[in-house]
Length: 91
Image 1: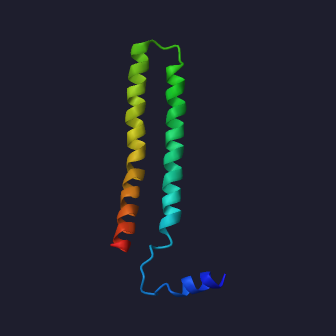
Image 2: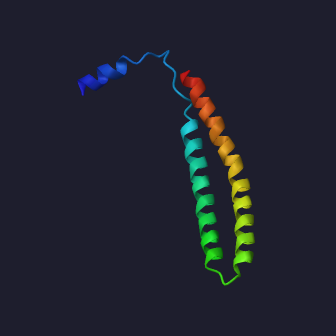
Image 3: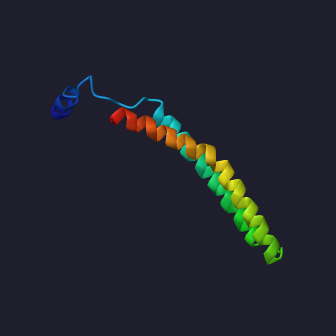
């Protein structure tokens, strides 16, 4: 325990730490992406197991893939922004 106290006391106040709001934002974005991906996989599985002909399935899957990319795009951009903020802190 004493070693831990000494180790924590050695941390300089001038050392940089990322903003405390980054971790909750990161967790939220990742959870949202997981929800989007899970819903996509469920819909994809549903299409694949439907009784539609293969051409129609292919069209539905292509549309679903486009929608999936569109839904993910703002969250991916948010991850890029968060990554930049983290990198700026430790640069």
